[in-house]
Length: 308
Image (cartoon, rainbow, N blue to C red; front, side):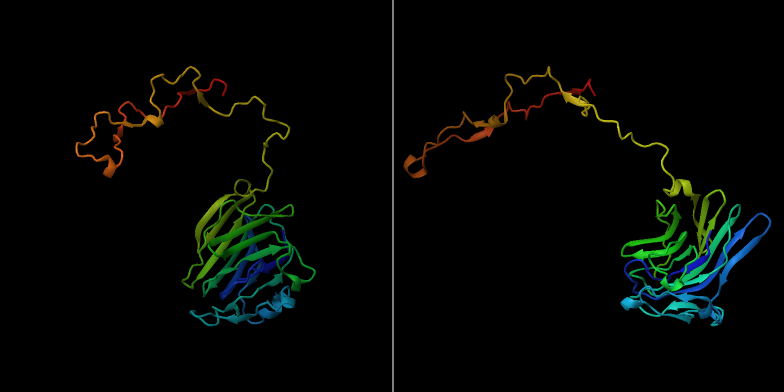
């Protein structure tokens, strides 16, 4: 499946850099389980010597926007040694770091990817996700263009917040049709992310050991072509009728129907006041009143269209 374990946190090694501090405390889980046994292909707790096991990305060095990593426990911890991880040490930067492992096949086995991440400050735009992909000829070039097989983890930019799970299928990075929930809110605590990919092409995702998704890659990712498509040679007939209703050709406006222009009429019962002075008051005109015969605007009756 892969020969390289690629971690980005909380980068947005693809896009706008983050404005927050986050840390990866442990990457303890790249392994396969079968009915008989399981094997761990990669495990990292960022203890002594982690710098020698990981390669920093130089993808953004020439632009001066590459961020620095440091070993830290963060603000809150129980055991300073046990709880240490790697932390992004600057705001508004791109972060990338990678480490290798031996090639393996997950055929007939459950593939499990698990890691822990903590955001100590809110992220305006950034992700604390990891990638699993093919071996790189030069790990320092790891960045946005680098191919991968799986991308997994939290990502946020503006109001868009989600836990990404992207699979590469035939050279295309395929996103899940509906987003997984985003758990990295503002409380500054660690969250455990676990992905289980099964041999039957189903997936289970847990965050803090709580199931947030379980389903089929075939159903929830557009990796396969649809069984049926619209016939590109089929054309709409020229006499096709789109309207289900039509005017009744037999319906006629009554001859005595009162139209809008006759909505108001002269009040014939009104009389010119005896004290009306045409020279002083002007020419007297009878007032208008509502026409009792007016019943509103006339509309032709609608009937079902037999050609529809």
